[in-house]
Image: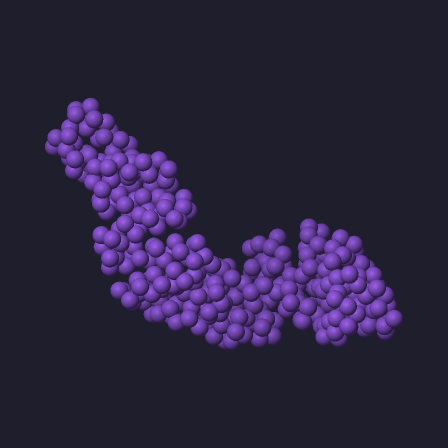
Length: 377
């Protein structure tokens, strides 16, 4: 019996050291010995089964681990480690309802376990049950105000529901506890960037870059914040770095090209937009090229590009408006209403078309199709 206990200790040490495959093998040997020698020691059997199930779960073999945890519960119905293992296994399978069932079982045993309460909140967040998630995050934080998992989760919850002030409240508390949470630094930067408080945004992105100088979200955020401040020359170096790391990313490529355009480096911008168009008829690239052609008063090129794009995507009102705008700027106003007649089906009426045309600029049209950069963890 002593050698079996020693084996069990060794297996648990392997598990602790994250040698999961080796620990699984050793727990299997122990369970085989217990069965072969008909050893009826419930505590020993439970420990061996628990270690075996945990080894499987840590290797993401959730479906194999679940019946082992259930065997443990048949021996000891309220065994906390087995209940937690089942909850985490179902969490791994994204079966939130079953995970919740076992977390609530744990909560019956220990009502003030703030980590379990946080897990419950996380599950409700995944289920898009906003009210329940908020309730349990606040419950967890009431027990432990420095619970970093709850602070992170509730911040994410408010962020996704555009309650940015509330998100900041909890994320700033989290950063007081650990100022090197790089994903939180970039998310806070995103909020300030969304509010057009670009200096504050840049401050948070720079803090993130001090931790990881190649962090994509921080580089993207600081580049876009500098763009928002119209510091295009400064922004250019960040867009270049991002582009060199990922030249096939259309969003980055169009941002780099836009920066060149703002600096009147039209040839560089046109080359990038043209490369994008070879792979993908991107609306961003079309709008960018149109801007260049309008700046250079190359009306025919702009018209041809719009018509080529509309030949593939005839229901895009933004490009239709731009085509009409080119004719207007070129002094061919009668052509603007020929455009309307051709594409009238995508506007409410002529007044709607005229209103959009009157209000249209390249910048306005870009802002309409702009997506706020959201990196969620």
